[in-house]
Every structure is written in C-alpha cells, then in structure tokens.
Image (tube, rainbow, N blue to C red; front, side, top):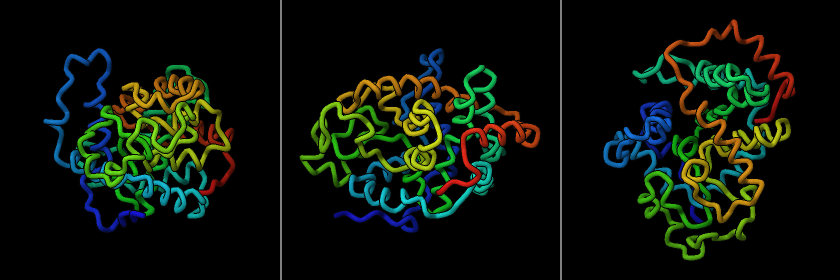
Length: 288
C-alpha cells in the first residue's frame, strides 16, 4: 500500500490559497466572458502548475482512504461555526500581495451576495461556511490535500479535470483495474458511494452533514468538483439524485467564484445576523 505523503515533505507551491481561487476564475470565466478564455495550460503561473502536479500525483485511492480514517473521526477539537471562522482567519498570508481581506471577510462576501439575491436562509448559510474545511491547512495538511479541483479516485481519470497530464505520475494510473471507466464502482452507483479526492469539501461535508438539507450538503461536498458540474464528466458514476444535486451546485457556483469584491464587508455589523442564522441550524459546538 502506498503511504500518504507527510505534509512537512512538501513545499507550498502557491503563494496563498487565494492564488488557486484566482486561477479558478481564469479557468471558469463568467459565460459572457467566454470569448476571452485563455489557454490556462500554457499561461498559468508556475506555482499553480506545481500545485496541481503534486495534487494529481499524490491523490491515490490509498491516500484518500488513509485521510478518511485520519480525519473523519472528527476528534481534533470542538468548535462552533463562528469560532471555526475565527480559527480559519489565522490562515491569512501576509505575503499575498493581491488581497488584504481576512478569511471571514471572504466568507461574508459570498454569503451577502447570496442574501442580496433573495435565496433561502440555508443557502445563505452555505455561502458563509463553504470554505471552512480549509482549516485542514491549520491541522498540518499540505495545500494539495486541502484545495484544488476534486475528482473521483478508484476509477479512470477524466481528461476534463484540470491538468490531466499530471495523472500519469499517480501510481494508480498504472493499475489497470483502477483505470476503467467505473473502476471499483458499479455503474451509476451514486456519488455517495464514491471516494472523492481528499480536500476541504469532503471534510466539511462530514462535519455538517447532520444539520443541513441535502441541497446545501451537495453544494458543500461538490463545489470543487468542476469536472462534473462545469464539464459534464463522470456521469457513469452518477444516479438521478446526483443529477438533481448538481443543479444546486451549479446554482451556488457563481457565488463561490465571482462574489469577491474590493470593498470589505463590515464584520461587526453583520455578525449578529449570521450568529442568529448559525444558531438556527447548528449546535453551539461541532466536532472537527
């Protein structure tokens, strides 16, 4: 069995996690901006290429299973949602020249954009919490095991995943049984039965899965699964419920990608509204 790569052995290929998010906006422009779509493979910043090379090399089926065992017992600490947001705030990278916003301000931008469009309260809450799984970085996980486009492991890699050429460095690429269209899974088994590449989406889903409606959980669990909800890949693994869930993921996606603005939200003014919203759905403390 291949062993997971310890976090301390990997350098940080991105200047900050915001560099990955900026790349997503370039790769997945708004529909009206499609004409300006660039060859991201040729022009992307070196740090992003190195990030995806590490991600695609190390996200094996064995690695994912090891991380599920390591983290999904949810025994690291007890925190409320706002407390987790403040904890995530310590991830701010002072070396990043492109943003001065805190992590809480980023989350509030997404939530406020959803709120302004009149969506249900649970939808607003998803905007507030959807990136909280990035606290994995604060638990010592390397960037490539926290963010990045997600994809199923244990079956053939789709060429619609960003930088598919880097999958050739993944040990699973050489295992014939893992490189068929459905691999270890039954056709149309449903994504609930599929091991996704490890990262903040899957981790947060397990933290909050007992408290939110299914539509909200789909947004959290699959918002980085761009190969499916933007590119139409992996339908051979999806059932009818998954196709319905992806409609909700697509509804959330613009708020995830395009809600960043130059004006920082007033955290103290907004905090009472969001603390009330959090209390509507979550207990005082959750297991992380």
